[in-house]
Length: 254
Image 1 (tube, rainbow, N blue to C red):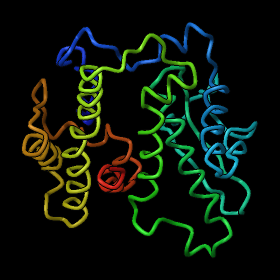
Image 2 (cartoon, rainbow, N blue to C red):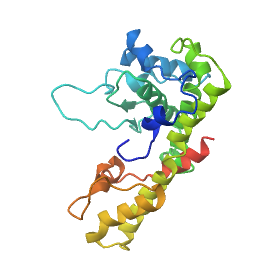
Image 3 (cartoon, helix red, strand yellow):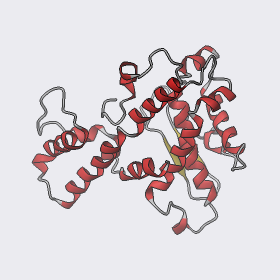
């Protein structure tokens, strides 16, 4: 993608076995008329089927699960605890595709975490480690994206469970999870350098690309200068949201 945090877009070019079955249900979702509401309801059913709390309040009338017309909004998917013990909402500009189907389950993982500790004192309403919250959603997403689950809910048909298909699935997982790790590490490393004052303000963008080259082995397609502020293109930098959570979560989920 645009940050090279995920490399799944090159999967068609590096797929080990091009003729093996694919695990991509976007086309099926569109053909069968899936709706955003249905995606959330299926996600909630997944959680309640395991004996966990009902999450339906998180996508009710007061939540924003599609992009509203006529006004600009921050579309970055997120889940919110209003800290009153009963109000929990998801904010997301959901599209009907497999990627957002997985993201819905991830965000609902946050809601489930909120529900589990809602009766605790405010001090204890958080993960023991910042990565725990993200890891809960990511672990659920691993289960949801398996061919077995997608077949069970009728989204994956004509899938042949072969060794070749499994290797393709693992390659896809690596392009998403393994390729993410250097990016997940460098975001906060750059932020910490900025906050500590160890890098001059006039060198922020150069410092960013030094880390991109060092850890991710990528370089900008065109020349970049200090007139640019490329880190700001990442929501978590602009919103001052720590990113090491995601790096830790990618380790914990496995």
